[in-house]
Length: 454
Image 1 (cartoon, rainbow, N blue to C red):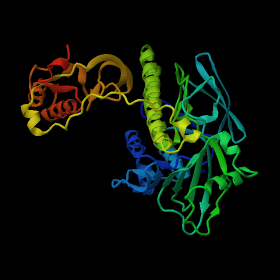
Image 2 (tube, helix red, strand yellow; image 1 turned 90 degrees about the vertical axis):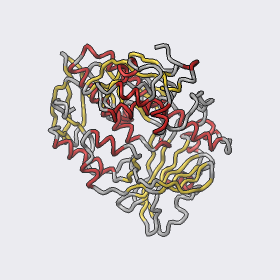
Image 3 (cartoon, one colour; image 1 turned 60 degrees about the horizontal axis):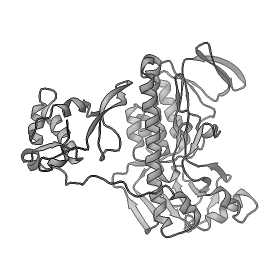
Image 4 (tube, rainbow, N blue to C red; image 1 turned 180 degrees about the horizontal axis):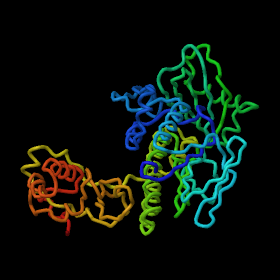
């Protein structure tokens, strides 16, 4: 928002650095930070990269390797502090630590009363972005999208702690171990809250240690000792019902919480903040486009929620097929029959680009859809097709609809790209034509029965 020219104030409750979950960052996190020009202080911190993860799931124990080392293991205290320092450089005014004692919409403005280390302060704002996480837990604002889940966790110190992340399926829980840059090791157990109360032990710590003893996370650790108290937080996935309004928006976990098995909560939070900034910019500067902005943001969150629900159900279902405990059955409940997909084809090669006449598949359609258009949300004709996760209006910065409407009949992908040469460089046209062929949007003319009517 600051880069878009708005006067921004960041109100943060806690002092940094401090511990926070979300220490294992999925591969898509850094690209999102680069998109917001926030990556430099994170890359300079030289957080450890994730090359290997030890997995004990439905298929038995095995190493899973990422030779590109795209994931990060971070100290969230240092990670968040570096981000705050970065946004100060963009002109953001930071109030930290500060607590909102009152906020009310009156006279076309938010009137906000802050407590800044015991001193009251009042500010006014045109727009409010709530990134307060799970604090607002009222049923009125949240639709639960998965099984009730409790995350119980604790940090350890010791001489021989694991050097790689570990994930393990237990009988009635799953476990996650995360080695951190400060040489501590975070162990987490994800359980059903009701079942956890039945675990032997008179305290939270005793029940956690009993549960942890059923896993192999600590089996090779010598002289390990707890580095702090055992804690528990709600980890149930949900979707906020009121994610955006003309004068406010919810971001991150305040809008959408996905199942922790995906380990991509931080990535999703950053993604919602980036798109949320464009939505807010649209609402403030182009209020006539509010319906498109609302539709875009709500659809984005809803699609992300459904996509993760399906993925996690399949992941839990792999264990449920071998373990009939209700913990796994409940989490696999959203698993359904796989949706039919269009026939797959081998990636297009140079010969096909020059020799295979193609036409539009009948399953392709152009539908007016809210989408990002530079710094605003607009409405454009977007390509819908079964092979696409979501409608696509732009590809490589080029609008698809005009290109698809002027396809010459019975031409090869190379000839199609050449016909676009007055609109774009030939290499761009070839890349777009190849993308359309590889996804089944353009098909060989031999499949006449599947051609598009347009």
